Amino acid sequence: MKFKHYLDNHNRITFYGNTKSSFKQLFQKVFTQSDFGNNMFMIPTRYAIVYLSHIQHNEEMDFFDRSRKSWKFRFFTAKVVKNSSSQRVGINL
Image 1 (cartoon, helix red, strand yellow):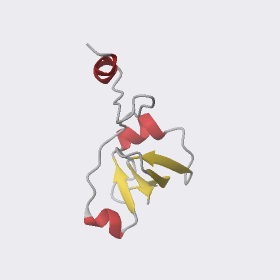
Image 2 (tube, helix red, strand yellow; image 1 turned 30 degrees about the vertical axis):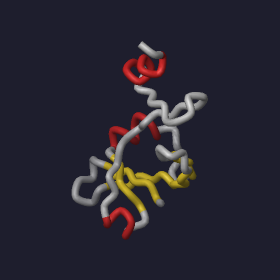
Image 3 (spheres, one colour; image 1 turned 90 degrees about the vertical axis):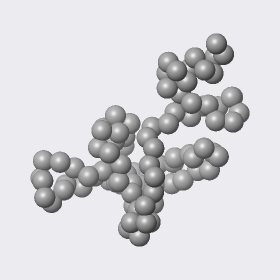
C-alpha cells in the first residue's frame, strides 16, 4: 500500500496534486443560488464545532479548493429565531 493511500484511509488526509503539500477535507458543500444571493453559506454546526471552534467571530480565514485557489471567508454564528437553543453557523463570502 502506498503511503498516500495509507494516509487517505487512516488519517483522512487527502492529497491533491503535488504530494509535497497536503490538505484535509473538512466538509463538503454544494452551493445553492441562495448561498450566493445572501453572500454567505451555512455549514453544519457539528463541522464548525470540530474544525472552527478556535476561530473568533468575524475572523478572516483562508480556504483552498481542490485546484489550490485561495478563498477568503469570515466565520460567524447566529442564534436561530425559531429555536433559541440551536445555532446557525455561516461563512461570509
